[in-house]
Length: 328
Length: 285
Image (cartoon, rainbow over all chains, first blue to last red; front, side, top):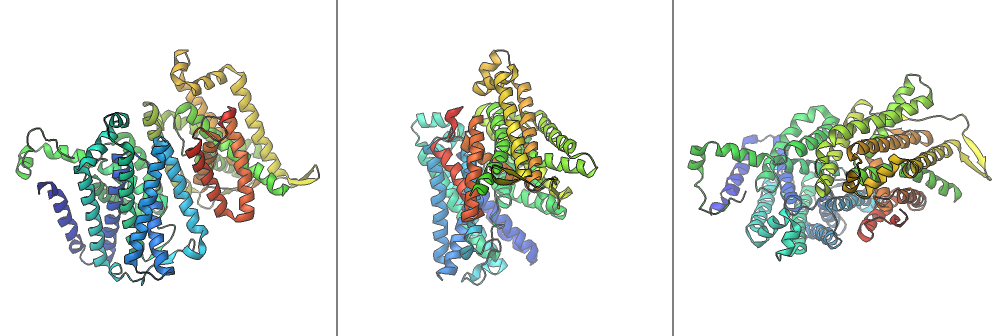
């Protein structure tokens, strides 16, 4: 039970956020967006943090699920309860395919980056090109497609909270099972992991598929929540870069890093909002500074600060049993 | 038909100019430069600013190319230092993220300072007749400049001692170091040269069409695609791939539209990585 303590505390805090927002739709929307980015960052942590696959197509994976769900609901008049899972499956399949092909061809980390970046651009041009289905640059209106729960702000917030919770639980379950051990081994040294009998291909593809499913689920729900789905909703600069920054800010390969990082990123984003177009510049500076000087992220630093107060730490958390290593 | 073919070749030569810089920096420095298109745009913007001051167009262009080179020098000596401390995969990853971040910095600055900006040169003679085909002088001039730059680059790499040392580093960095070659100084020189070639591409873009401040990412992507198809370590391959993709792009844009043309180029690059990671035309190196 203790293992779930931090997830439980986190859920409680996040569940109380709408009360703190005091009914302001603006702040509630910001909080909902933060949840969406948290879930995306949890997914990216699995792909990039744990299995070292540099996927630069998060926008395309989330967007594929979003567009598939919306376009099918619109064209075929199917219920979103059916089309969202189809979208999620499409995203998971694509993610698994990229992972499988790149392991099969033995691509290095940047070639995976280039292939997925190319896919991200293909997605963008496909959406623009398939005008009769996607309405091109203008996008599709997604309100009134039979997803009333995602049309009011408050229920939407809790739906995204549930999605985030599901993502965290899946992550926790993966990391505490045999696959978690495999992830740790292969992120340390892939060759050694392979030599000690770990099926590297299988675990890389598993991580990519699960993470892509999380990306897709959040993306598809977001498409309905947002009221409009267009190429700019699922853009590279709007998703991949913030998620990368959030993961670095919070701390790679930690359970709460994506949450802390996404919150920190949301705060930074609010601070630079008055500067308008210059936010791109801030993204660039953040990427450079974080990658050169702060590669550990906030969670390890916070934990050290926390452990600097031993009395406080002891009261809050009993010491781990001898020989057991804390998970993160 | 010939008009489209000619257009494709002109465009392809520009792409090769960009891509060869990416190839050189990757081969020599072990860094995949995702800010390469931004070098081109900075060169073009600098040239246009000098033009506004009333400076002779040729001098302004040279000034623009020189400022792209200066930016390359600065990037190599400051931004990329943390990446050079590592080798192999780690350096590639760090270099990729650092240059990606830098490209955002440049884009942000340019879009903020020069939002509605474009560089266009006007030539006195708009059309020339050559072998029965009338061509735009500007396109012809742009192609000749690109070819001259390539000829100079090949001569430099094949005929001079410095060029030979550069090729030796591309072959094997440690081996070259053992022979007494200083990789870090050669690297700076190459990043500078590559940035200047990008600057040439930026300025000549203003010659046969127009250059906007927002075109950096597009240049980077196109250059990257050509570099990948040509083989990220092969200079001849890059030149050939640029012309090939330029022609493919021109025909595809004409017959099936710009979006599909772009998708074809992207799939080309993707397929190259998956089928022949060393590059489609890498055999000729």
